[in-house]
Amino acid sequence: MKSMKQKMLPITGIAFFAVLTWSTVASAQSWSTLTTPPQFNPGNALLLTDGTVLVQQIQSFGWWKLTPQLHTIDYQNGTLTQVQSMPTTLNYDPTFFASAVLPDDRVIIEGGEYNNGFKKFTTKGAIYDPVANTWTSVPPPAGWKKIGDASSVVLPDGTFMLANCCDNPPQAALLDATTLTWTVLTNLSGFVGKFDENNEEGWTLLPNGDVLTVDAYWNVFDLKGTNSEIYNPTSGVWTFAGKTGVQLWDSDDDGCSGGAGTHETGTGVLLPDGRVFATGSNSCPGLPGHTSIYDPTAGTWTPGPDFLAGNDQADAPAALLPNGNVLVDTNTGVNNYPTTFYTFNGTKFLTIPQPKGLSTLDSTEGARMLILPSGQILLTQWGQPQMWFFTPGGTYEAAWQPTISTYPANVYENCTYTITGTQFNGLSQGAYYGDDAQSATNYPLVLFTNTGTGHQFFARTHGFSTMAVATGAANVSTMFDVLPLGFEAGNGTMIVIANGIPSKPVGITLYQGGADHGPC
Image (spheres, rainbow, N blue to C red):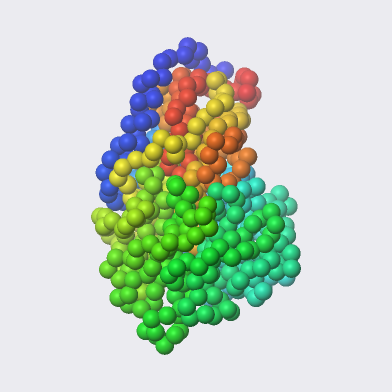
């Protein structure tokens, strides 16, 4: 048995360290890049439950893992290592696809507007197991000939719901993650009342467990249409959610291209106050996209500010910052260049520094955002062999933090534990895009810090009691595995992080051994 430090040390110093880490991250608004640039072009990125980031290598079967610098949550100085590639036998290399981290810590990839670089609304899919480092093929829902660039969401009960991009009447499907089989939802059962096709629409998970979308009017064309809808997972029914007040999908209502609108929409970001900030697109160069804000309590929409400088959001990412503002990527028209980044503070758009090194030919369509445990936003841009990190100004409000109520006082490596508390899933899904990409982080991460050394290391979380957002005072829980990598015995603290916001630390004692060598 390896030596164990038995005596509990004071935790006041390490509590200060944890606060200092996040306040330093939040003190300066700036962009930075990965110190050692990737030797490939990164695409979609998803946050694994052990604090590492799974990164797609575009136009290949390759996938990589970004690990923060040893004993820190410093991702800028982290390292990229290649994980198991998608097996060539799957013949699956998607572009613009659905994705999610599941409650059991696996990652699902579904569909694609392109496959292997060729335009094809593929029905292929796969699940990545980060523990086994393996990919497993997922058969499509029965009868589906298309998935394509589909919307998806993990519902509060942990079920992955996937849209069929282009069928009319519209359909969706629910995944049984154990058997990798689907239950198809149709306009007759489980997906009743959908106004139009799912194509080009994004899904926003609301605090009550419902799903909001802004209609893009596929197969139900109305030049001036402004409908929105809400889906109730329990009843399986869509209902009208009101008019958005201004048009958010691109119908070419302004007539610059003879009425040939793209149907593109922007993002729908759930804010800390429970409202949804929805953004719009506009294919007329020089004319701005509109925005509107939905109040789920009142069931009403209020038009927000237009984008600055004739910009808009069409096939574009956004992310809720830990300080409550929204980072948005914009360009003029649909998929034009260059891109311009702003933040929205709940009332107006603010100009911010721009990332250096982005090509002036880059458009928002190739950009992806991900909230990191550090509170920074990871940005990738298709075709660019680099990764950017946005450090926001300000900080979170105390009421937004997760809280830990029950936890093990003694933690042994190689053991599994359960902790309970509140707001483990954060106040929103985190980062948004729409139908082409999803990188939600509404699940808890567990981080230990050794008091004596100040070294930090993640556990691996799984078995979340809920995947709901903004759960308030409700008691929630997660299981976590204590990983041997980087583990140090001694006195320390533990925190839960959700969407880049940490809980207050609790004191624990860390032991080496466990499982085969001691109690769990």
